[in-house]
Amino acid sequence: PESVPRRHDVRLPPDTTREAFDEAIDALQRALGEDNVVLNDKPLVDGWYLEHPNTHDAFHLVDQEDLVSSASAYPASTADVQAVVRWANEHGIPIYPISMGRNVGYGGTAPRVPGSVVVDLGKRMNKILSIDAENASCVVEPGVSYFALYDEIQRRKLPFWIDCPDLGGGSVLGNAVDRGVGYTPMGDHFAAHCGMEVVLPSGELLRTGMGALPGKDGADNPTWQSFPAAYGPYSDGIFSQSNFGIVCQMGFHLMHETGHQSYMLTFPRDEDFPDIVEIIRPLAQKGILGNIPQLRHVVQELNVTGHPKSHWYSGSGPVPRDVIRKHASQMPCGDCAWVFYGTQYGDESAIKTQLDMIESAFSALQGFKFFLPSDVPPDHYLHDRALVCSGVPVLRELEWLNWKPNSAHLFFSPITPTRSKDAKVVHDINVRLHAKYGIDLFPTLCIAGREMHYITNIIYDRSSDEEKRRVNALMIELIAETAREGYGEYRTHLLYADQVARTYNWNDNALMRFNETIKDALDPNGILAPGRNGIWPKKYRGKGWEL
Ligand code: ADP
Image (cartoon, rainbow, N blue to C red; front, side):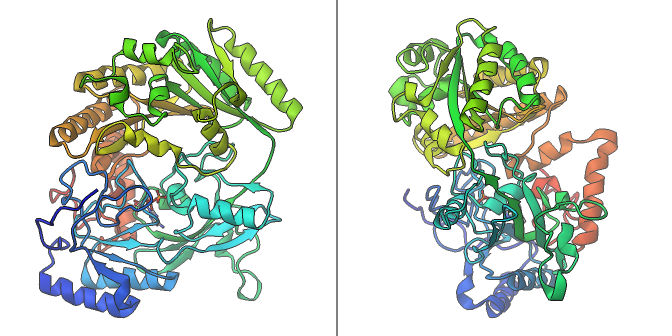
């Protein structure tokens, strides 16, 4: 994508003069080295997934120059991160830490407060600090991607899997801190972590879990990656989806490799949705569904081929149901409504037993079909699911972005119990509001046992202000309507952080008041990622920052 000349000069941090800013940047350059602090004064380039900018949200939903940093800083060590934090306190300049910034669909690398200094940890802090083959665990810095961890495990010929999200280029640590999900039995990334090293907003260094107990003669604690909770309140949770600290190291459990079999099920009718969910519930709760399987609407079978929307439909609104049907009937999935992608694990006989149980449970639904990877052509999406579900990072999901010219995307991500009554409420709201705003609905339900992440991928043309406005209005209404019914998002784009945070308002906003108490105690100057997840430090509250 070509770059357009900047309309504005460097976006200064709030309440900072150019003179004070230049002095502060000089000081930061002296601390980190001149080349490791770079002003954001050049034309903005959206790039693409693997060459993403750290200057703004590449998938801008507002004006490209609205959510921009003033500069990027590249620390090389925990000590450098402490220096940046102390510098921010001294100069009153907000900083916004990112690991690799491939948080696509949720805001990318953009700071919530324009003019913040983005602390790009991943560029120089990208070491796999250890892989403990006996404990089946590792410790990584923020810049370690799924690809890098995977490659290192292969290089050392270790019998382990990692758990990747749909796209493998993101940071293992960053995704876990943001409570992202993957698809093997260890798909809950935060739950798979064990131990953290965190720089607090004061610059002080904290180790959580067993890491708080010094190992013999100054060594790391031998149990740090074995037991997550240790003694006293379990503090790790407050460093996820928050602005209470900068995580510089994080431990993760690795999964032992095992036999696996991916498969696809199809269901013929749109109205099968509640019955499918009811059949899934006991299978998921009992752990018969071995991983985090996905239930998708058939429209996504068109999408994952990588063909643009115009290949299927020349109209301007959402692809009509009969057009989807016509195309699907020519594809391996056939004329169906819902597609389920699952994987079973274990030895051959265990997998066979599980598949028999699953087939027999779904056979209550007339017209359901079962496919193995060997039943579909080599370029079928099922083969990519088989890779992701056995710990191999891929980039196939990027093909969604072919759907439109100048494609960008945004996730709407409510949680429902694995129960048809609840899932249907959320689904019906999605169907109605996507139709109202003329946007294709792409629902993917990631099923994790008692709950499902109901994720809709909203794809828009970022060169169209009209489309951005429509998508924004859709998003605001989706959040409000689902909350009215009692459902909430597990994660959201930074522009909706305030609205989503406000929906969690039980007992006069007790949760937000609790978060603000912690924020003000840990970060009295309000320098660390103000506004992230709707948590504003005292200095910013009630001054018009909340959206
Ligand atoms: P990824 O590249 O894995 O997709 P990001 O680096 O974009 O992830 O991280 C997602 C979000 O999590 C960031 O926008 C930031 O707010 C937060 N975050 C990432 N890394 C850290 C960290 N090391 N410490 C604190 N917050 C972080």
